[in-house]
Length: 601
Image 1 (cartoon, helix red, strand yellow):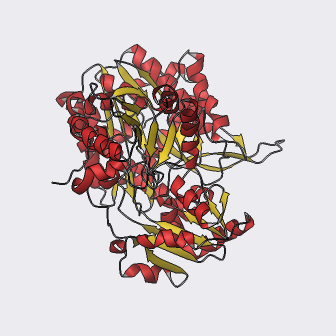
Image 2 (tube, rainbow, N blue to C red; image 1 turned 45 degrees about the horizontal axis):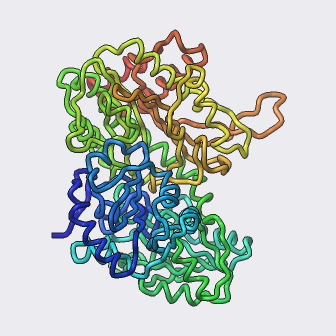
Image 3 (cartoon, rainbow, N blue to C red; image 1 turned 45 degrees about the vertical axis):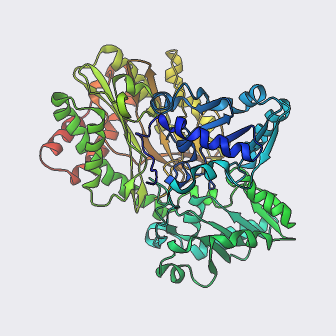
């Protein structure tokens, strides 16, 4: 029976699978082997066939890695998965470490060892740090032609997904794929290259105006493309995914070829200048192009910025999707404020309820990520998911944090609300209001055109810092248009990209507060970068944010006296707009409730 992977994957996987992996490592003369979470396309969410880390360890989170030696192994995750990694991996088999410590671990643990890695799974950028660490340890990082984990997995490995690749109509994309190919081709030529190799699923989907179903929670087709500077392209797909409608949709300037033909196509770029992104494409492509005699031009994926800066049609679609989604979420919040207060369900029941409300829209294609529902102490884990024995029931006097979103043809949503169960304490109201102040600061900020998200991050944190508090995640991430819920290059965080926030970019606004062992708070909406009015006497073009998400904020948790007059006015205006936009999609008791909770403070 072929294995599948979900949040209930158990810790016995390591005991069963590590001996098989180690046997294959020995055959290849390897002392150790690196297992990243990423697959050949650097996807965040993976098809079951590419869940190598889950097969080896049992851990199914979206960020992690493992290093396996013959006599020991280490598991690396970040703070989002503290509970999940404990539930899914065996501590007798895996030492648990922080995801940022892989390179430092190799420096001390890999003395004079031969460490194997699959060049198809690591970007050149990621490999640089690992190679430097191995060199310090006197170790060797050795690329493998045949992944020993794949060989150990053998016949039990699920088949690669073959979901049909379908057109994403111009009514949703706002620009034809011919127009996109022409302007991306020009960007390639302007960079001094003859062609670009594209391996990121999101760029394939955006450039050709297609969508697929190969990746859970994201409508992505797995494939590769070579786009020439003249706008003509070769698209490499598993032939099982090619529907009768696809060739006609793509036209004569896009040649569809089988995935097996890609290596020869790369070899055929000999003598050409070829652009490729070292942060998104695996080392295998660089090695292959070098061996073919191509001149590699390392540069950002030329689709990244155009994809991130949404056009007018995509923005309007996102507005519609968020109003539809906001009505579903508001019905859910009404359910929490009434039924949940009495029945006190468990977190899994809460997740299922929110998913039902979204499904009732009739337009939901998928969730945009697995819904997070944290009751009490579990809410203090920013990316907790209800898993096995960790599932808690909602309790009076505590908080319930729910973070979820939907994939709709016209937009992708992501929203978090924190709700009181029973009467909140003064401390809960105080911390919630600080988070609300941080949220309002980012929602209302005006900034000069060309400013990066990293430069804005401190503005949201200022109310928290003034109280001696902070949160250990970014303030905002980029979001796609019926694509990935986590998409760069834009983000708002202390660290990372200095990419400017451009008009049309959609980002989350999600400050939080987490008291370990007690409860957590996060308020998240999505917003789009828009031009802002320049005050009289102003000298520079300015940008701001338009709110896309509309769902009420729990007023029981707001200490009104902590808000400035401007902050109070913002909350009243936001709730009035929520009622005006979402109210027409609601009726009965839920509508009456919405009117009450959206009344002025």
